[in-house]
Length: 405
Image 1 (cartoon, rainbow, N blue to C red):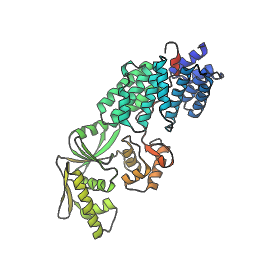
Image 2: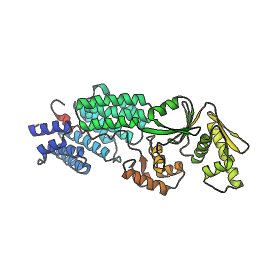
Image 3: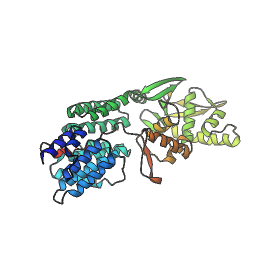
Image 4: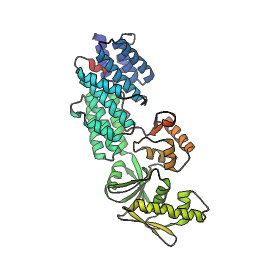
């Protein structure tokens, strides 16, 4: 490795993309192309970065498998940053094996972290958690350790384990400080700030209170009956009933919970759940059918009892609490549904929200333009997710080819 390549690699490892480009911007040999590709990725020009990395991979000969594997890892992270998840993960897995076999442990671990982050972006939180557990995190280099802890924090937050998330973010901060990479420190700061923002509003007996994510976790642990309009569930303690794809039943549960401990008039239930202002006997019959279904579903948690004018909710454990998104409006409900990390189709979101697909599509387009939602796939296979807790600043570690890497 010549001195200019080594100096550029050190600059990239420290996050100084412009400093690296000053050293190698005019060179077209494969090592320089690879480092230029990494620099462009760190500057956010992902399309140019992929082009340079592909040229570098083609430029390395058959006997330079290690260098080509590093290019594959780098290109995979650029694809991740572009949210292009269509490629098979097999090439990345093969590159990780090749790097491990040739004693490039840092880049092999980096490749596996990219695979973890890809799982998180796809909403496969359990798989991401299992893959993270296989990494020996305490022995990772500081930049990789920071990214691993950011991923662990997101997994914990998705599972409503805020103490674990805070601890992971603290470890990420310490690692980022040791790495001395400002972009990583900014990601950690954003993750910690997210924990302190309002995550939901609590409504019970007519009172409303903003809750942070830790307070939501405490409320769930209390055993109270929670009708959660953020995730469209009815829960008490560890028992949870998902109703996201049964909007009428959830609307009935929410109306009954809002009125608790009082009853709700039959007309109000029909108007709120079916969106009909002038009900007739057919709607009253449908109401009885839907309430029968709701009774059966929530029987382990609560009862729905008839009163003289309507129905009321009787919980096995009190109080009854309604959780709603921290802000009102269509976008708030949409973001709340996406917050579980799962990938949703437009039709499923429309069903859960009780609105038209066209309305949901408009809201998703607006949310994507504002950076509040993201999509994967195309056409009928297109799915929508919320942004991850951390943006995962592109930290391509081809500089591990340095002698001390």
